[in-house]
Amino acid sequence: ILNVEQSPQSLHVQEGDSTNFTCSFPSSNFYALHWYRWETAKSPEALFVMTLNGDEKKKGRISATLNTKEGYSYLYIKGSQPEDSATYLCAFSGHGGATNKLIFGTGTLLAVQP
Amino acid sequence: DSGVTQTPKHLITATGQRVTLRCSPRSGDLSVYWYQQSLDQGLQFLIHYYNGEERAKGNILERFSAQQFPDLHSELNLSSLELGDSALYFCASSARGAMTDTQYFGPGTRLTVL
Image 1: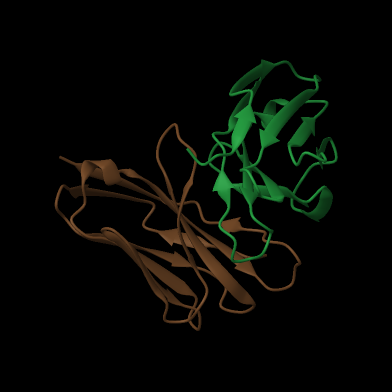
Image 2: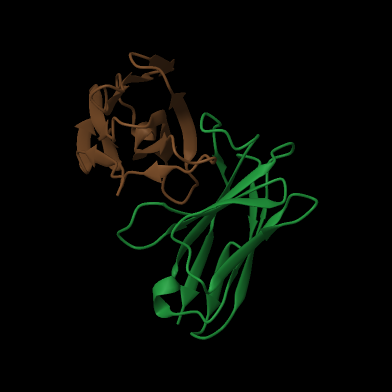
């Protein structure tokens, strides 16, 4: 059974703090790792798709790194703002199927206090 | 706005009934995916269609079925509904269905079975 784990489950930070969270996934048969941001009452919004070991992606104040050999990815938010409050999901896709089946973690809920 | 539309937004029905959820993918996308988000569970992959053909099935119950039509919209049919089927059902679309494709999520349909 493929398992994708995210930690911490939730995080409360003050506005201006920088923060990071982790996604752990199977290191064998890796193909891609996806990050999504999911605000309450909205639908998940794609942030990054990462495929190469050592890859680093950036979008504004949010960045992500990928280590496929040890099976983890970090998401960093620099200078958190209240509008960053959301659940951040990672999803793994691996070899062995002819389809982009994403296996999602349960997410990290980030609350940024003004 | 991801460009993926889902109807209806909310659905309340009784046990034993049958419902149909509808999804229109982003313009140009050939793949449609269905996911279920139950209480305390992460997003669970149900089924993937590419250009009208079923590509993969996840943990989809036999009471559930789906199809993708020639105009590429998709419908998810849920029958003999049980209380445990109450969940948020998301549709996502992607350009082709490759593992590196970003999946764009619709706003979801919240199903409540009473």
